Image (cartoon, rainbow, N blue to C red; front, side, top):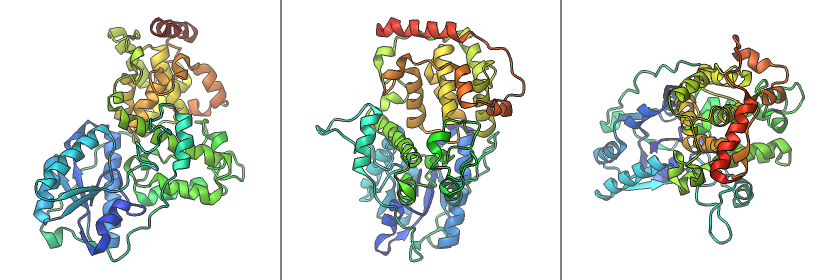
Length: 445
């Protein structure tokens, strides 16, 4: 069993498939050299998730996670040969790099009459499964989400029982390489692992968990509170979904069981649909990871010289003089996370007020977010820039002052993160006009 973005034992169909028919199962994780390009906070959280998985394995199977370092294209076939394993089971990966990596591993295994077997994925509905009646795919979220719900998903799978024949270092001679030192994240990270993820989820769906003081559960209040960064109105499960310490299928099943007719439940499940939608778009058009999905906007004027770099540096540090923008950027640096409404506000500010390339902001987020996911992050940035899946927002320019008044009405969020407010670095009205001028130059509208 080659673990990747499925670092849990429960509701893991790939793990159950590996253990079927009494097969011996070696739990493997490969520390890929490409991880070095990921942000330090995300690598630190990965380390913690692996430690938690290793602990769970030792408690249930008596053996630990086998860790190997190196290119999976070399490591996985080598360890399969070492163990004389007939197959390697994985949760399917639909991201561009993951698909290339797995294709290479599959070919190498096939050369020795072994197989790479994909079972399940990190998504409720696998990319490519939601289609129109004529077989075409969707590029707009709302119709996608309707078919996504009709398509449905499997019921959560049970955790593996005590009869799994785990095989570890002791009985095979496989050296369980140490995971190594935990990367220094430079920020406060959430508790990691399957148990911690399920605890967060239980608190979110608890009948008295809403942060507005009502008797509602946090999920029932989700539609009302999710845009308020000054309140705890979201689940904070995005890092868990990133590394698969919980599966969206588990969340959706619990939503159905606890009251699927409530508005908060429906809106929360729609956020999971957005996650699947962006994964679907990236699966179909992998170039859109770093290139405009809408090529008509490739020629839009952006500021990339020294002046642009100076503006970018102020945005990164949270020194723009706009309270909610600066609060979000400082929250990101301090915690590796940012409230989703504030992600939209800070992204709009970078591309529409500062006139900088969305790729600059997307890379900064990927470097600092513990939940950094290529599909969700970069297509979210394209939504803000107006270059992505939904054509309507191309002309939308968030007013950071009005956004703060609406979503942080008492100023508690800004006050928490910004102790030294500065004068605004620009006039939003002037920059909004400039943004619309640049857009009109390439769209004609």
